[in-house]
Image 1 (cartoon, helix red, strand yellow):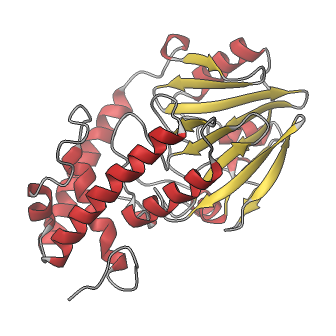
Image 2 (image 1 turned 90 degrees about the vertical axis):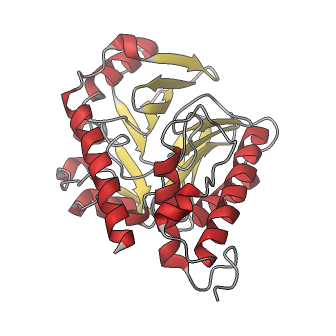
Length: 309
């Protein structure tokens, strides 16, 4: 009953946020900024977070595409920055609505749309989700047409390549990263956020322990010179990524202690698992609630969690 009550509280808060988002005006070009990483890779930042933009002879390569509400303004901004408007490739790092706004445009242009199979399933069939809102099935043209499984894969990009890798149960169960080895640029997608708490979509099998596993994967990919593009917020280094891993590891241990003590979600939140970490970030209680709920599918057999009495 306690878990149900807490879930309803979260749902109400999310619904209120979605209602406010629904009446917000779409973005304009003034809402976006660009930061060049190399001659052919640029980070475009806007209301939905970061989009990594590549341009070569084939056209545009994008990692994520913002929301549908802001898609036109985003593409107009990218066109002004690059001189190109044809999307050749789009890597979708997970299924949430703030990542898939350019899917339909890309599909209509004949682009390769790459995603993990789980993300493809959500986008093809839709999903009910009380955390980020329900998703209707996308039009056929918007559904990914390049399908990766746990082993990931490779896409071409000029004289470089894009290594797409799976991040199991990070933010959802279908997260991927996109690494450009020639440029040494790593787009982490929604699995890494650098301007707020990373909300675990446990309804899509996101799990704080899985997020830690995914950080370890990303730390293996990166080196000290890698430019890491988070889903939102400022660019990161490997040291920044390690600091986040250490922070979330400590929070994981605190939540695990609450779980082993049979705390309710309210009690776990009251124990202040985020402590002194990032007081400037909003919604610490909501993050703690979602992270705590994410443990429930992992009460047995997870080596990070340890023995449950």
